[in-house]
Length: 256
Image (cartoon, rainbow, N blue to C red):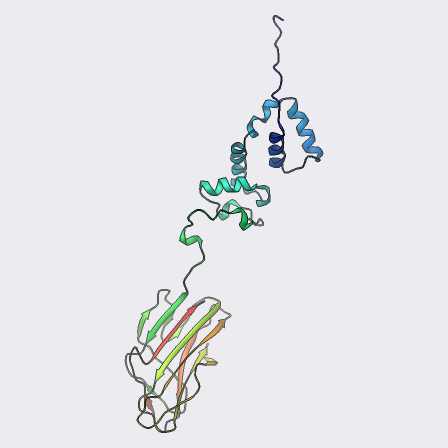
């Protein structure tokens, strides 16, 4: 009829469209709020065009991710699309949310910094290049003047100070110069200058021999300020010197 605007029939909405919309809105087909929405959209099917395709759903949910939505609101296909586009970072996910490992693709290449470190940290190795005199019948702190490696700067002044709570494997070796017959040498770790753990049993030497003591132990440092030193003890009748050198008197450790 002339002068009268004729409305076109609303676009038919199929089941897939509805399911996508219901999923996006986080409800079920039995949810009154969703049913009400369905009725409204049925009166104007063109409104559904924004959500019609999975790619559009992905764009909308991606925007919601940028707004820090809970992970439970994100569907598997949305996660996959976001991961493919460049990954999900901590800032994208609400603090209380959790993303199931099954929803994260493992087909891509992950930056090395995002993976757990495959190597040990807080590691060092040092040795004694100059012979040290060890007083008889007393514990002597061993000195180390050469660092073979110490990438995290955890060793200084003969002391291992990793600066982090955790489990550590620590060890050392000491050779004594010309022991007396039947006398012994032994090694021990001290934590915070207090007796801690022996590394070796007393090693008995013979006249003109070079007794050696060595060992390693797994320990737990419960405080970031904890530190460890290596100590030696011998019961010769006189003070004795060590056999200095990279092979003979050394100290090492790392965080597991």
